Image (cartoon, rainbow, N blue to C red; front, side):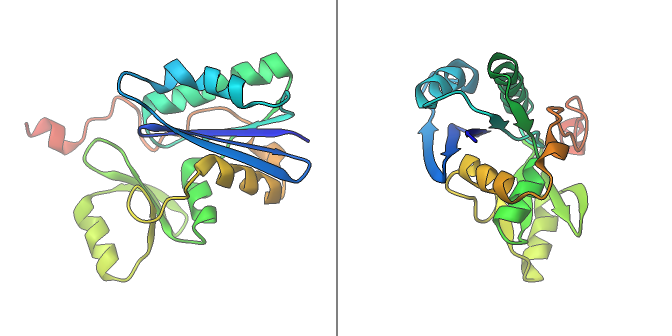
Length: 187
């Protein structure tokens, strides 16, 4: 079974490939003037040694634009290659990849998406600092991040008990994209 994984992070595209117990991975840092939308499909085309049976990407939370680009690309590949999809959310993948550390993803709106004790919520930087003082360990935008998130995504797929249940390419929002934080209203 051939599996393609990709994830878009701020300023980089992460790619990974698995087939016959062999892995291949690549991280491409965006150059000035490049965008995820402008290079992702051509990177995948160059990277793919054969059509994938499974396409794995993330549903969020995170950058609204990156999530949409990832999911639109995954759906296009699913249609074009008749592939199956594996689409977990970023928080669950980070918890798995970091062996239980608290995942923290910058919302770019003055707070952070996180999952603490199976509860997904937004927290502020002062709240992060309080948790640090309590000895909590973080992963993601604060703390350790896997070198290649797409590689972690493929490993997650390979050990997931029933990957068919995560085949829905729907964005995972903690709040709506139109949400404005209190900090925005105080300006």
